[in-house]
Figure 1 (cartoon, rainbow, N blue to C red):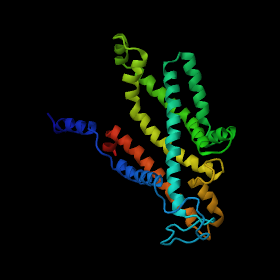
Figure 2 (cartoon, one colour):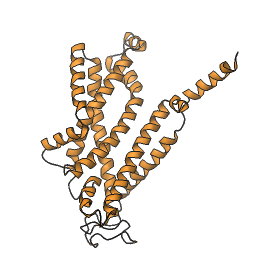
Figure 3 (tube, rainbow, N blue to C red):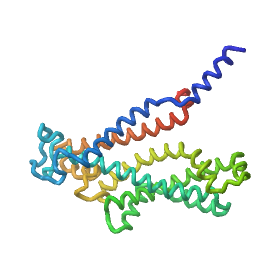
Figure 4 (cartoon, rainbow, N blue to C red):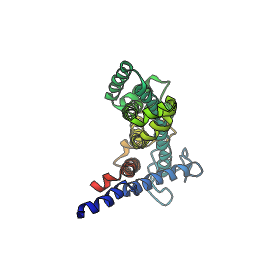
Length: 288
């Protein structure tokens, strides 16, 4: 037996054994900070979010850690509230997108050839439209801009991507021999979905959900910047950036702080998604 043959089993064993990913750790820390801040705002904030008792556009100080905005509100409090809104929007949009997308994707995987092709063509058309544009259309068609209309719009917009991915993964699983054996043994199609299809496609879907979470956070900030997101007094980071553009030279912290908060959360989510991919497929780390 050659030296290469002796090393092969060890390498294969190491490749198959899941390991903790450094990118996952960093992403978990960044996202964990925002989650902790969001939970903290449920019980405590430095100031009342609607209080205008501070001076207008005050610089950072021991009293107001990030200064005040043009209305005299504590800016650090606004940033903290923004973390909560970003996480609510991201989680809500992903939940709606997953519920609609996974359902449609599974139906397409089990559908007849004609219906499957029709659903696939429809999904491709929807995916061709940018997520933000679809969200804007849904918000415009609703009663008005609100936090929940933004969540619903983003969830519907990203459901097409989830549905297409679910359809592809489910059809791949259904081609395996153990599906035929399961059906032969008397397992119903719902049982096949629960026992075989969903457990096999869930790791890939979870990575996609993490990526969609980051996209939803950015899209909500964009909607709020355009006045189509969460209305006042909700302190969305996008709305804070929109309000700060007129005072960016006199009070730059108003534009810098929300931008940093948004970037750190999105980077953390992306690293978390990359870490989930590493944990699910350790061979990717070995090949790097």
